[in-house]
Image (cartoon, rainbow, N blue to C red; front, side, top):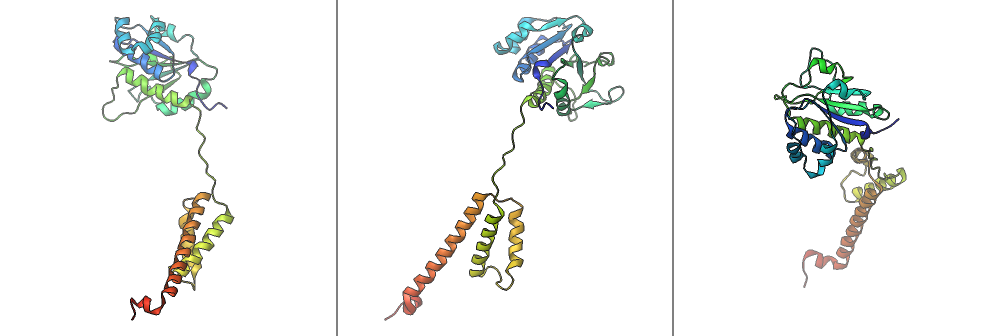
Amino acid sequence: MPDKINLKNVSIVLHRPRYSENIGAAARAILNMGIQDLIVVAPHNYDQLKALKLATHVAAGIIANLKIYDSLTAALAPFAYVVGTTARLGGQRQRVNTPGTLAERLIPISQRNQIALVFGPEDKGLSNIDLRACHALVNIPTDKFTSINLAQAVMILCYELFQASRPAKQAFAPRLASRHELDGMYAQLQEILVRISYINPENPDYWMNNLRRFFNRYGLRAREVSIIRGICRQINWYGGKCYQDGLQAGPADAKGGGE
């Protein structure tokens, strides 16, 4: 089963946009997100120069190649799956996807089908009649103010599609310490902690179980076990050195002076 969306089969459709600048900004947004096909239906007073200004030179090719239709029916004729965007909910708009959910849903569909993602006019959005041509609806969740600029809405949805087009990253799996390595570490820890009187030598397992539970929460790596054992060795060496230094100093030096 495919694990990513095929963006080559996705087109963005702007239905009756009122501002040429929004067409240009939408062109730039879809290019950012790896989509190449922009369709415009019955634009209001379309001005290519105004569109190009917002598209910038980078997305000028999308503006040059955009398809313009007089009706939504004609624009959607080649598509096997149509998604309508909506800010309004309820009524005939009951089953609505979030952008992330939609992206996941489109992964298998996009493999062999042409998909259209349709955005309505800036002032009204898609009408109920427009939505009859849609197989699914998507809504961008917002806080109290539901109106989103057309180009911003295009960017948000195309971003989710782009994320679904990227291969899943393999989760990093470090080499965890083996049971043998952990047992050696715990034995060394117990010996050191008893020697420095940190745990009761009469019942060391009680205290060691607390340490085991602590370390088990983190899943120690082999290198981390090696570091802990190195610290134990250093404590052991330093304790022994201090003891030997005390013996060599003698009773008089140990008391701080002599004759």
